Length: 248
Image (cartoon, rainbow, N blue to C red; front, side, top):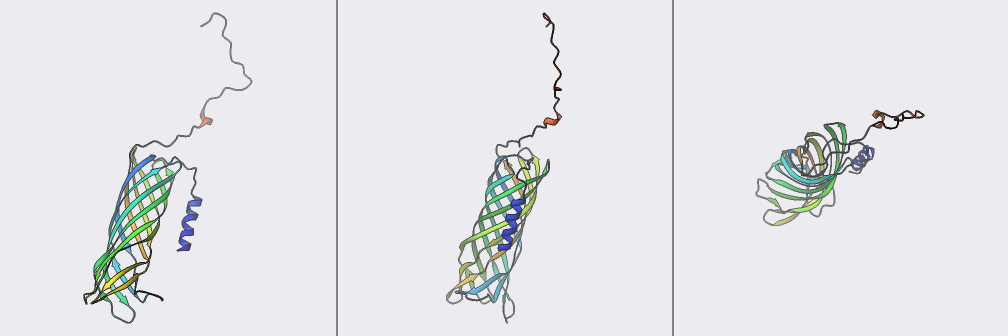
């Protein structure tokens, strides 16, 4: 995780802050949708003191979200985003035991604050680099063949980073295609099988491919730089002609 964060901060440091973005500025509202996949999640009875010997596997599913933010005159956007995903449980892998099929799934509802640099590639296209921090509500409802039930939700820390291409559609609309990596921290839940036992789930690693649409409420155009080299100039040392008296 530390190396990933260092890469993210390095990308921001290298982003050209003086690059002008051709898209609109000001307040905006956004909608997004796409596909997400979740890596295997470690599973252990609490308290867990060693490496988790069991893992839960999930299938990919659709995801959607909504956001509100502001783009500044510099190529920087700040936004608050809500995202939801629901992953279907497939198998439980345990050391020395055959895979156990599962039913149900686990949902995540995330509230993330993002910062993004939009680096202009052309008048209509920009490269977007983003990083965000927030919380995610992890809510499993998973059953095994013996009738055991994993349940209870918990809100935990989450962070994400991503990159995408944003295209200007009109004076107040932008369309973006991007990839995001999101990590949700370890969480505590309950497992009922005749009696209730505490369970710990490890960090959740999600990959998201999204299409986003941003609508600027009252867009303002990016400032246009004036090319003074193209303006005509009066040669120095040449006196301007003087009109004779009485002339108009």
